[in-house]
Length: 129
Image (cartoon, rainbow, N blue to C red):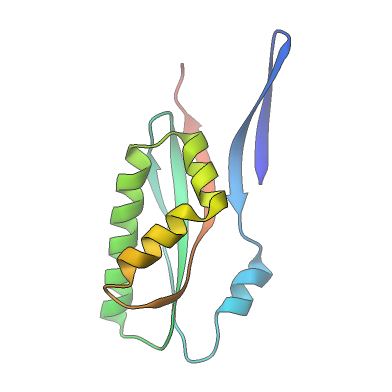
């Protein structure tokens, strides 16, 4: 996790800048006989523009149509979630795993997943206050 620190008078303010999952964790999760789905998109939240890269692992091999449906539904859900949240809330819920659980439950209707994670969460541009 990368943090951005500002000094404002006597106060020191820290805000999250980037969150990454370690590559060895992702490699361990992708087994033979499974598929993984990746995506990368940029979206607006209340106080900045962020880039989200979700990582989904299916329980078995699935068709390309199912992978596409999972990718599109994940993107749709994450964009709608980000629009109504602040950057700090987004990082907090991602660290706690709350958004991953909710997303996994929604995507289970398309195909059950063995792993649903946010691989990279990055603040691209902060809005001026």
